[in-house]
Image (cartoon, rainbow, N blue to C red):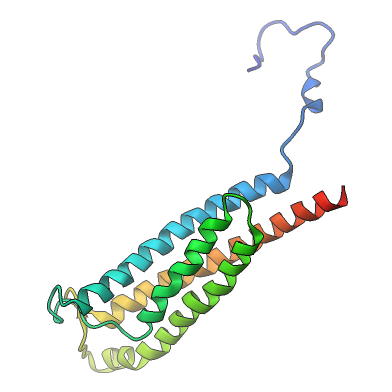
Length: 183
């Protein structure tokens, strides 16, 4: 480390650092985007575990249906959202573009599409709860539609940010491979 106090070596003016190599910007961007995608993958895994726990608990009758209600139909295809998560995780260590593209496409099919369908499926129940104050399904004493809409809001945001960061990461990787081909 350099010291800003004390004698300076003769014959230098302090600009000797300019010749040193720097990390290329696309490598810096790739590292930061990978970090963001990993964080979002962890949040997606937590959401997936919550949905899987509700489906498992209700189907195996581990607790009464008064405590944890039967899952909505959109929750079953949402369980397939583990596939894009795995593809995304496999793409990161070696900058595998194929797995990243597969993750982006399957995220739309297995993550976003079930959430959109779920929003439409639960809308009449939410409307009835809002208008009449009646709920028929519960999760630990809370209205199931309210709890699941909260989960959906978080999940949509996570998937949107994942797709955004994966697209930027894909562009970064693609530009890096194009620069290598030019040389």
